[in-house]
Length: 115
View 1 (cartoon, rainbow, N blue to C red):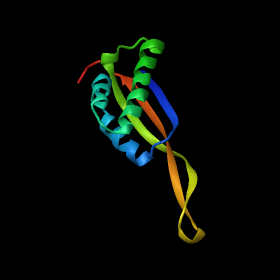
View 2 (view 1 turned 90 degrees about the vertical axis):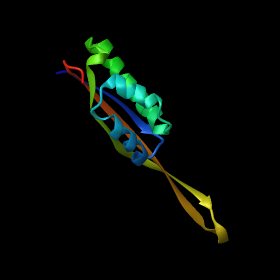
View 3 (view 1 turned 135 degrees about the vertical axis):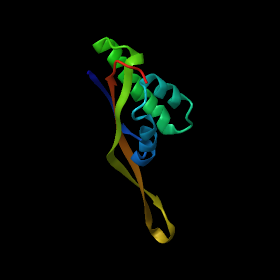
C-alpha cells in the first residue's frame, strides 16, 4: 500500500482547535472527508481542506492513484512556536498575549475496497 503525505507548517491557529477538525477527518474516505470539510464553519476546516486536497493531488500526480481509492490513514496536529506579544494594562504594567502556531500533517493511503 502506498502512503502519501502532505503538511502545512506555522499555521496561525491553536493546535487544540485544529485537532478537533483532524479527529473528524481521520479514517474517512478522502473524497468524502474533503466534501465534509467544505460544509464545516470552523477556520480549521479551511486549513485541513487545503492540506487534504494537497495530499490527494500528490497521490494523483506523483503516484497515479485514484482519488476514490484513498482513505485518510492519519491526520495529526503538532504545536509550533508561540508568538509572544503584550498589551498595556493599568498602572504601567503589561499583560502577555500568546499567539500559538500549528503544524498539520495528513497521510492518505490507497485501499482496494471503498467503504
